[in-house]
Every structure is written in C-alpha cells, then in structure tokens.
Amino acid sequence: MTLPMNRREMLMALGATAGALASYRLVRAQEGQPHPLGSPGTYEWKKPGRPITAAIMGAGNRGRTYAGYAQAFPEELKIVGVAEPIPSRNEFLAKIHGIPPERRWDTWERAFDIPKFCDAIIITTPDRLHYGPAMAALSKGYHLLLEKAIAQSWTECRDILTLSRRKGSIVGICHVLRYTPYFRMMKHLAASGRLGEIISIQHLEPVEHIHMSHSFVRGNWRNTRESNPMLLSKSCHDLDILRWIADTPCTKVQSFGSLRLFRKEMAPPGAPARCADGCPVEAKCPFSALGIYLRRKTWLAHKDTPGDDDASIREWLGRTNYGRCVYHCDNDVVDNQVVNLEFGAISASFAVEGLTSYGGRRTRIMGTRGDVVGDENQLEVFDFQEEKRYLWTVKENGQIDSGHGGGDYGLVRDWVQALSRKDEGLLTTTLEASMESHLIGFTAEASRLAGGAVKSIDPLAVGHPAS
Ligand SMILES: NC(=O)c1ccc[n+]([C@@H]2O[C@H](COP(=O)([O-])OP(=O)(O)OC[C@H]3O[C@@H](n4cnc5c(N)ncnc54)[C@H](O)[C@@H]3O)[C@@H](O)[C@H]2O)c1
Picture 1 (cartoon, rainbow, N blue to C red):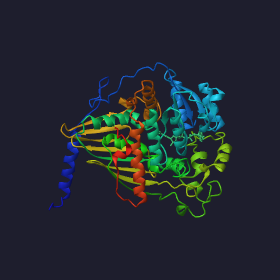
Picture 2: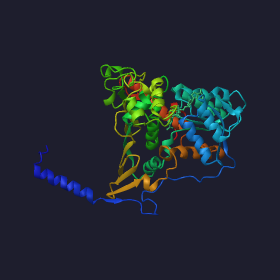
Picture 3: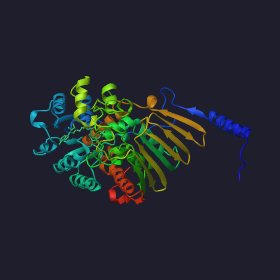
Picture 4: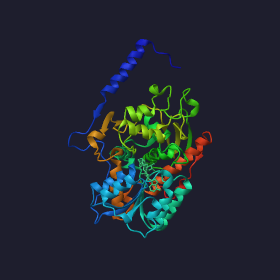
C-alpha cells in the first residue's frame, strides 16, 4: 500500500519531475539542414506529356478548388466540361477555363448523354449525388476524382469498386489530409520505426461550435438522408488517417454518441423558427444567424448571397436554411460521438465533437520507443531511449500551397501523375484504401444506433486492404 505524501514530499516530487522534464533536450531542425526525424519519402515527379483533360460535376466550393489546380498548372490539367445547375457557378468555371457551350450542362446526367470526350470526371456534387455520376462515368470508361464520402451506403461503395475494377479505371478519393505535410510526417514517424511498435492512438476532431452550426445543423451535412452520418461526411478523413497510421486493417469497432444540443426540446422558450422573427434571446444566442452572418459577416465565403450589404444578407437569411434557429432545423446528425477501434493489436479511440471553441485535429500516438503529440501545427516526439524531445512544425518544415494544409493540390498533383503515368500506385488514396475508412464509418454508426454494440469488421469485405 502506498502512503499518502505530505506537502513537502509532494513539492519535492513535483520539483523532481519538472526538473527532469526541463533537462530533456529539445531538438529541432537547424536552418538549411534536414530534420533529425527525417522526412517522408516521395516519388520522382514527371511532367505529363500532355495535360490530363477532365470535366467537373458540381462547380461549388470543391469543384472550384480542384479547377484552380488547372489554372495554376495548365500543363498538367485542363478542365474541358462542367455540369452545374446554378448559372453563376457554371458561368464562372466556363469563363475561366474556356469551356464551350456544348460542354456545359445544368445537371450531371447530361454529361453522359454524349460519347466519352475527356480522360476523367471530377465529382464534387453533394454527397447524395456521388453514386449516380460515379457509376455513369465509370460505365463510359472515365477515370475519376471522387469527393468523399464515396457514397451513402456500403453497397453503393462496393458497386463503384466493382465497376471501376471491371473498367480498369483509376479512382482517386479526396481524402486530402493524406497529402498534407503534417499528416505525411505523422505517417513517416509511425512507419519509420521511430516510435517502435505502435501500441495505441488517440485522435480528436474538434469541429468548433459555429462551424458545427453552419455545416452540420443548418448546412449541407445536417441530415443523414441528404448527406451521410457525421462519421462519413466529416470524419471519414479521420478514420482514414487512423487506418493509415495503424497500417493494419480495423478488426472491431464500438461507438456511442448523440445529438444533444441542437434539438427542438433544447430551444429557449419562445424561440421562433427563424432568428430574425423576434427571437427573445437572439442578442445573447451564440448561434444567432444574425450574429454569425449579418453582424460578424462570417461563414459567408462559400454561400451565394446576392450581395454583402445588410439588406441582401437579410433577404438570404429569410429564404435559406442559414436563417433558421439551430433548435428548429431538420438536422439529425450527432453533435458528439466517440468510437473505440481495434486495429489488430493496436487500440485506438476517436472522438468528433461539435461543441468546442477551437478547431484543429489533435492526435497522440503511443509507441514502444516513444510517443507523439500533434495538433495539426506541430508534432512533438519524445524518444524514451534518447530522452530527447524533438519538435517538427509545419511552419518550419512544410510547404503549404493550397487549402486543407496543402492537401488539396497535393492530392490533384498525385492524381494527375497516376493518370498520366497509368500507375495507380502513385496515389495513396485509391478507392480500395479509402473504402476501409468508409466500412469502419458505416459499421461504427451501426454500433451507435445499436447502443454501442461491439461490431467485428471483416477486412476481406473491402477487397484489397491497402495502406
Ligand atoms: N475533401 C474534403 O475535405 C471536402 C471538404 C468539403 C466538402 N467535401 C465534399 O465535396 C462535395 C461537394 O462539397 P462542396 O462544399 O463543394 O459543396 P457545394 O454545395 O459548394 O458544391 C456542390 C455543387 O454541386 C452542385 N449540384 C447540385 N446538384 C447538381 C447536379 N444535379 N448536377 C451537377 N451539379 C450539381 C451544386 O449546385 C453545388 O454548386 C461534398 O460531397 C462534400 O462532402 C469534401
């Protein structure tokens, strides 16, 4: 039995710990020198003989992002068609990329009424419109760049995989985090043996409360039928990263979670359906649409408000979901969810949390030789044998040239290389690799709905488990 310490002993013990920590040498890269932790390997980039030609289905935020790569690197990628129902978005892309009228459509179906006219189709339509265009494009023999989530059910994901194999198409899934310098370095640390054998992983995705209200309560990803469960629409990235780091198939999952706050039962007394309709608590409500969009003018960037003056924003709030009270929306996706995972001998836990004041994924990896603590800006590695603490920062060691920490353009660069060199292996987010995170997501959601039942995953269900 351990005896309780008195105050003096406690202070001495704390002092000894602090002293020991302080004496650990912090090692970082010297200017112009390679980082002492090494760096992720890369393949030799080759200039394509001609630009890959592609048509975009859905010229919203993501469609325009990937089209931006063609603008920046016209010798690699050329956008030659667009399907988009919103005229201003269709026009915007057509103008920049010189797309002729006969290659412009108001909906994706039209693009497949004509014979194959380019190398690939980029699918950036809303989640519920991935399966249709993906199957149509593969039937016609196109390669694909397909936004996550792949589709809305495991059966649909399997259909896409089966058809892509039959047609020999290369399908890149937009798990952009794998292409960021930060997560590539994390993968390097796990794969290089630097941490010894991986014992366990903890990963948190703090969504940030206003982002939660904008995207998952009022916005496009609020409703499972319209989009997907949170684990697929938001966190398939995270499940994919966990699988990638663990480097072995997931064998069991268990999940708990719920929608606690953003429900009508939680509405303040007298709160009307829309914030502008005389809500008694509007001025104090952190989720007030008037506060977020009108007074602070935040989260408007990807929305087609008719103008940025107050009258235009009020008019927009009056007719769209973005003006609705967060307690009176048709949302059903969770605002908190935890998942326990078993990757063979590696245990892992994941949480996606809507009610945080901050964003930025946090990860801890525990290995037999050392551990890592990361926050998307830096990775701190402690080596147990050397008793040294190493610091790697994105600022000092990464190169960011696009959104998602550089992942957006990193993905397109590798996808273009894979297509032009006819080598799917140059892409780390192949359909097979990405299907695993989707299987984990669908299974974990089934566990949550079954009250947290432990569910086994058959790795063979995916087809080709890949890392
Ligand atoms: N990889 C990532 O990190 C990431 C980030 C955000 C979103 N996404 C995913 O990307 C996809 C697009 O998201 P977004 O943020 O660009 O949404 P968005 O709403 O900005 O864009 C989707 C576009 O598709 C268009 N569209 C709707 N019906 C169509 C039809 N029948 N034919 C052609 N176009 C149609 C819409 O008008 C809209 O312009 C979603 O599946 C989303 O989950 C991925």
